[in-house]
Image (tube, rainbow, N blue to C red; front, side, top):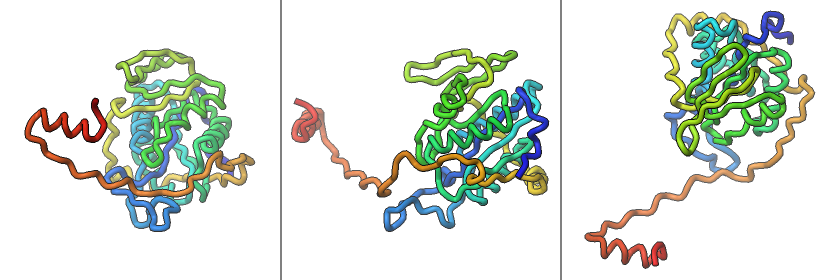
Length: 260
């Protein structure tokens, strides 16, 4: 299927990658057979880091520094719900790469590269990681495949011409770097606070078209590089022990081999 907005996009287009995940307020449990995570009947939402990426793209467009925001998602038809949320927030158009199988980061990066080649964005934004697998890999892999700069863990983003100044959250504090556009930027929690979606915007978003592309039509090898053998719940936390003084604490630590 042809993409509606291909003829309009240029270097000022921002592509935002959205992933459908179990809502962060929902307690996740593995399936009884250990084959995966139980998702049936659970609330699904946009990955919170990706929602921050979309909010930042919208703010950039509202400042007149971009002309269009396109949201892209990979997954089953149900991902249209999250794409419509993105449209309700203010995205101009949406693309769903329909895939019934979950993709590992290398495969997702190859699919997103195909979307970049179609849409020709001047900036690609996505969350630093997804809360379902916490891989923190797709953005870095995408930038490498694209052959463009990357800036990860962004807590502040400023554009000036064809240069982006990014403040990154690193172990030692904050780091400020400049990257030439086009580039891939992954967002951290402190970058912004996503806007509240209003009911009229939700109703309008239901009428907007979503371009759908079957992953099989892209001709991309999505064979996973690794296989997850089993999912298990973490061990219950051991009960603590109260001690009356420092001497008892040290004795307990020595008994457990934690101090000499």
